[in-house]
Image (tube, rainbow, N blue to C red; front, side, top):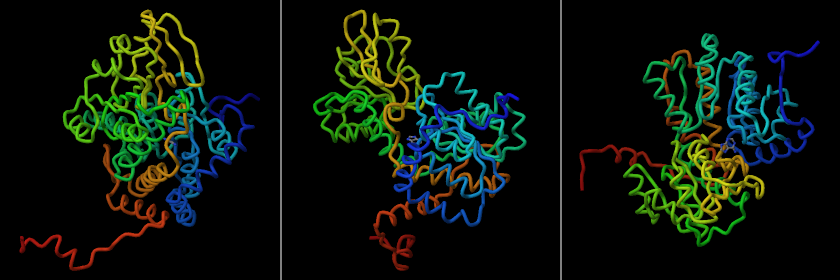
Length: 424
Ligand code: ADE
């Protein structure tokens, strides 16, 4: 008897890669002490027992540690990747062998991508876990019959949280969603240090160019742009940023980063990275004015920041130079190098954020699932935050794991902080 799509329990590229995947996951586990501590603690009490969690988030070694932790706490899990080029096939194979309903492989078409999400939804989740909100959108627009069984969901990214807030404001969000991105132990570490290091890692793996002395342009000086700028500066690049927000531009200026418009930056940049979450950041007129040899990539969630249709329209020939690096020769004779097809360069060309950073991001994801399982039914439809105390708890475990101590306020100091009877 043949297996129907609905009965499939996994689809991955190659199960024989599982041994390699297990080694990667072991490596990540040795660097994710917060999640491992949560795993040990909640394996005993099984607070997620009875929950069916469907996730749509990059399938990496760090995500595997999160999935194993959810399972250890009692959940059943189904998963798909949230980007066609970010799945690590060996990790997907290892997880499929462990019994996770895994529908993910590197190089998915758009059709494969939604087919995979749909297979994870065959599992009828009680909780959804997102990176980019594609799963929540899919439930809302294609599978609204699932609303009744869903307690709530979580969202990992700035881009996703923005869209969900817009959806909630229009009264269209039909279950509570926790904005994991907005936890301080997520955005202030993952978005800055994680994106900074992993994006440069992706650029270097795809090109191996020397960054020292190059004009390095970050489109956007939010947390991700700042992270890339800091790291590029540390490697000796001359950093330039382009912004639409005056306060962000001003911060960049005072941090020693040159600010200019993209029209100006396009003419002088050697390496460009978009970090904005906005579409059409680099378009035809920018590509036309770039120098011969310019390198262009993106680290925002969606692949619409570089307008590659525009680039194609002024291109006379293309060739793949090396993994994740395509040369476009323009009608004007200049060559432009596009990395990772304009998709997240840090995940497509490298391994995503380091485990040490994802440890805190995913501790927040785990806590979001716990909060929803515990009291999601009492939260209204809309976007909610994790309690601030959790940030301190997560940061404290991280500090302990690094062997670093904290001072403690004395009772007199605590009283002093709120004493308005004394001034100077
Ligand atoms: N997003 C950025 N880096 C990641 C990683 N290593 N794993 C999962 N999601 C990520």
